[in-house]
Image (cartoon, rainbow, N blue to C red; front, side, top):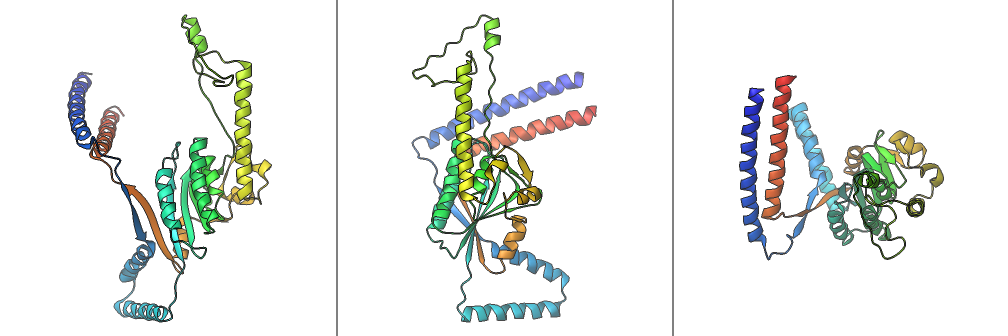
Length: 339
């Protein structure tokens, strides 16, 4: 116990010092960034063919003998020369990534990536979206889905690959694909709407605390956290949920008419193998397998829009990482001592 007391005192002093330093650095960064606009971003483009080719060549260097390796390289050079002479133009595949949180924050980058792609993509090309999301806010994922709809409207084939999860708002995005590919044990579906909030009105009433809610408009507030909820308010809130669910169902049915929408729009989720039977997906395959196959006959370009972080943002991120590491190390030491 004495050790714990000493350690806790040392930890408190250390945290105080760290926080003080970060506050000072943050103030300096704020002064330096004052008057500047939001940091501009840029588009990073990487040719994935070179990545896959590098993997293969590295393995060949280790496995094959020099004579066989030399012969293989000569064959590759000969084929490349013949293709160039014949004027062959491989189709292009533009690869995008979307890792969704509850607010669909990745939409800010996705919108710029799609704008860049649509500036040169043709119906002969393809866009592949590697999508991972368990869903979130209706309006946020509605915007994300609308960005993907731009690709369909431009007549550019869209393939959506799901390796882990595309549920609720995530599936709202996935269903827009001309083709939806899923890993066998990815989670898909959850075509439903949910809203929940606590209500502490009785607790406040018990302690003689009044909470007033003033509105203009009968349904400006239907359910509240602190006020007393009414039957009429609950009914209106439920009506709004049903309306949103109906719009969600119609949206999915529009892009995947092959679905039995009433059968799958129950809020349930299915693993990839079962989702294939429900026609939520078109094929079972990982994104790695699909892209490796496409790399044999097409040019693959991975796009990523990156925003340059301000000094203040970098300090905040570094502070967050440092605090996480400090807490994890502290918990690790306690576990090591007592367990």
